[in-house]
Image 1: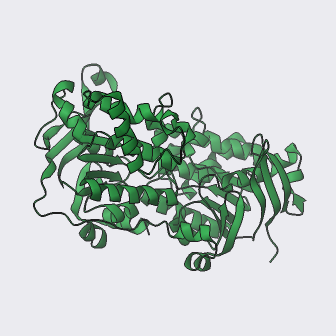
Image 2: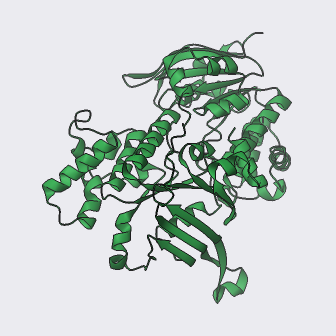
Image 3: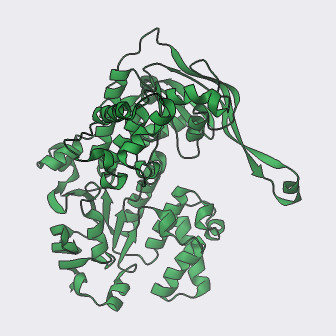
Length: 527
């Protein structure tokens, strides 16, 4: 069978730097090919270059499509190909969709421009496409703006827009990365069924090998702009030949959990914990009083020294709100004791607890001040919690914390004077962990600590956290939707849905023999 798309010696450069080095690849009609690699490997920019969307890039090579070389097409001819013959789904639908137009208007615009439909016919077809992607009440959703629907619905709307003109090839750039694990499964199933129904080829760009196993026929692996391996999914993942592919396959988190001491002291205990938010009421009633949204509905939890308690659930389940309450950052009802004390809301009275409880956030780039050096960032807590230290003692503590997370002056000359933008994502997360460790806490709240990282970097950070727990006897309150991270890190787990804890127990009990259908759905979706 002749190839639908043939890439030959594709090269992409920005200025003097070449980021894709001679990529040659074929995609057959109706094939599902996964292009795999970590951030910076060149997979996304290769797809953008095909459609002339890699701004500021110099592109060379050949991309044969229906007897034409896409890389030599004029702008009008390329615009005719985009959307009609080759369509693309982007990673983050909230930024890809126009916030000023409804979903229906954005899909209808494509149909009017590409297919010449009238305004009313395009709107009717837009509603049909939304229904085709499984969106409930498609006519009502068509009149909604992107911010008025969930992440999964926004991704479905993006797919509907991409399929509007029945393309022969769909480029799907990390289409599930921004979604919860159950929604990821739904979107993959949707793409699978739509691909079979329409007979189109799909180039899936991803770094998640579980998604590759579940979806693709063939896989091509990129490292630093080079194609290093390709073949059938089962063959490549079972018997990888290249060292980089072996490293990716070996990046699945490994469980390293020390047994709890039977007499380990309780650090956090909550009973009937309840968190509410005021909400506006519709109409004239909203002038006089507020409604109430219950974000956490009577949660119980117990966390001991040296234990990792994972709180698992989808976005909106209440898990992050629960963590904020445990950190004393939200008012709450019920009973909450951290090391036997309740949060008072007084900065002076709560200062000892603030030292004992620290947090590591999901995105290290946004949680680290770009205007502060590494020395200032990591040492900031010491100035508040250990003012008795001299500058020399403070610098020594900072260096010790950085060394403990694997950042050393020998490898990073001038380390303390550097800024966050000079480090990779995994290194920035290590900085965030060092910042939390430097004041010697007993409890770390880990809010999705690896979800913003590539798979191999995720494993490195998880290994670091596991080692730190053993060395320091730390307790972790782990907030996540990643079942693999729960398996690797946790002793016990709470499953939350719609603000309520629906299941709790040891990791083995909950993940191996879940009682609730929702828990089974989360576990099954994780593969």
